[in-house]
Image (cartoon, rainbow over all chains, first blue to last red):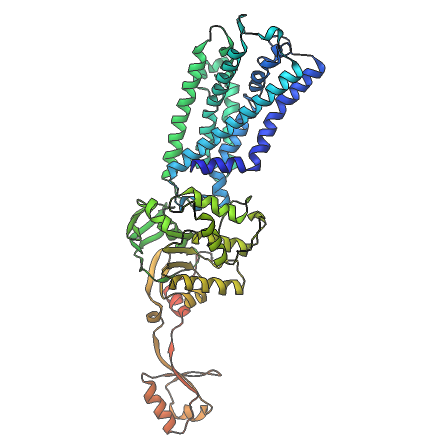
Length: 270
Length: 301
């Protein structure tokens, strides 16, 4: 079932259009930076962006930092919200279930497929950003990259840490994906599931800026998303990264269980 | 093939299906009748494990459902309400995708099984256009093909001729009878009496969630105790049988009488010419109308 869902994902035109839209933003920024040579002042704008003018090989990280707060999770809310409710609306859910596909298996396959979409988007974004970054913005001086702590990284170290950052960004999307999947088993309309997930994202981002919500911060789904920046300090600051992973795993456990409890006892009447 | 005991489904306080005891034997073509909203679709969904029963049991192919769904359902072909397919794909691709999702459909002969199913429903020549461009009738045929892909032992069909033109209905009827001759049991839910009358050997009639009639069509359509006589000598017959003629119309006379042979002799000996003499049978419509009230789609004041 997982294999079939992945084939379906890769064969769908919507997947590739969405990935292209996500990819358009960092690509546009790369072109703008290269033609105008005006970068944000250090300390403002998305992470890494002030550093890429001198070192294009950091651009994949800047690109991930750009799509991670909104573009990617919004796309995941769409794909995840559509996963079960979309099949129900289209009428195929009942035929999938009498095929038969076990309900638990269906949920797991859908979550895997949503995460595969996240991985695909991140890989495409990182790859385009790498090509555009090195072509348009050029390599840094002496093939050495500087960390935020002022020490230097060799190219292979940079590649390893970029890969780590990609994995972290992927894991960060688990929470959104499982919330979207959960809502998708509850409502009849895929749009409602997507909007519900987006509401959670926006709410979480808003509460993060509010001092009065300080006590809630560790539980907010967007809290640790940009902590992958800590992977580029020397030594690596693991604290927030680990908390981020644990928090996302907790989201998956809670919402996948809730989705399961709802879905396996549900009367499929659409 | 299908046996339910005390099958009940409540939605809140409303009992959509109430204490249903269905019995469909292997080789039957079983017609499941009832007005709109009488619980037919809910029953079909419970048989297939889509809707979970409030109480009672379902056995499909002698196995409990939905517990053994993984073993049973690969041998069952189903059409539940409207057909559905992945609208962005071609009909073939959609069938192949659904076939690949679950057990009981080998990968090696998938292509052959799909082509065979498409041929049977008259869609052998479809091209790569997406299902979204199909007409209602083509979708219905594709849905039927989907039910046939794994050569099921049991077909559970909900309104299978919906959206088809008269020729299409005839084709599908012939197909179902052919499949039945090859050994497939057919469970057909419908409110089209003519369709059921032409196809089914056994029927069950549902009214407001309760099974009010179940039996062989032949038995249900038993004689009414009246004889149908057509004669050119109507006045002579009327004089002879005064009082026993219950209905006289252009189509002939309906006479209350138990013995066709005796009546025939009586008429002929009196010089009344007989063109036709046959016992009158109840129509399925009479049976169903007598057993049910109007459907829930009628909302009277």
